[in-house]
Image (cartoon, rainbow, N blue to C red; front, side, top):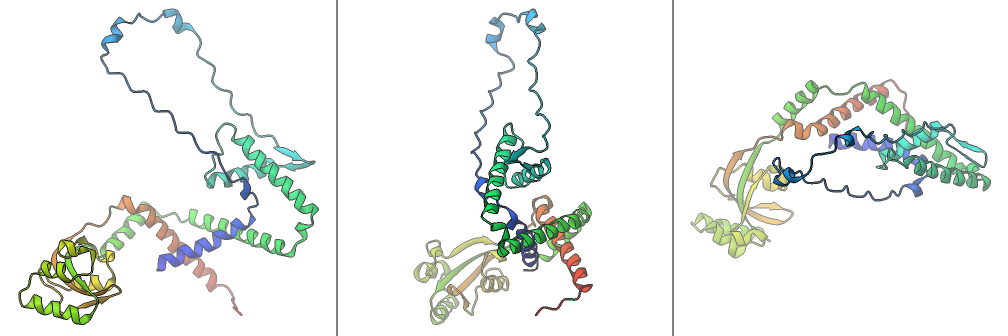
Length: 314
């Protein structure tokens, strides 16, 4: 829950920046063509190769084809629309934004496509200004929110870049989290019925020596009844808390003599086995740990800002 709040706080600030985007209609990108499959390599010893004539030595003297000419530097401005310039700086920032949205901004022809998007945007801006929409008070508020969002976003990025977690920080946090989580796994069966009285009757039959699997097949309303109530191996977070807590308190081979109530009904649980489970490898969870440490750093930074501020929420 703590990490979720941090993530929501970050997303709330960063989402403000999206209010300033006015080129959403140009976001569609052509589907990428699948690359042609690579030609299969010939075996090292190709019998047919011995029959082929030797290459012509003169062929080796032919010049190699000239490499494709490098794309020319961007002009400034990149376009004029009714005399209004679309500057190189605007283009570069726009291209970076589109790249973050998954648009290929580097392939041949990408400049032309992105420039066309900006021309369309400028045409729409000029038409909106002729309609007087730039004088709309609501638009002014939205533009101010976008400006504030971009400022906050840039500040967060600068702050996080200056406090990037080191490998040592990540390893220390991993060890702390790994030590705190329950690495036990349980193998259990259960009988699920609709009422507490039914569950108590089943407990009585088990205490009298009845077979658990046979009772599950006869009485359980759960899909596991066909397998005698077997649930297989599970970690505590895979089950609802009431079920996991009850199973975790049992000794191996014992069943719950008091029925366990969950949102699904009433359970009688048989714990068959327990084993230790290794935590996930550090490399598998490194991105999540880095994100967590950055979130904690942001929360600490925000706390310092609040401590030094006068805030009066009406």
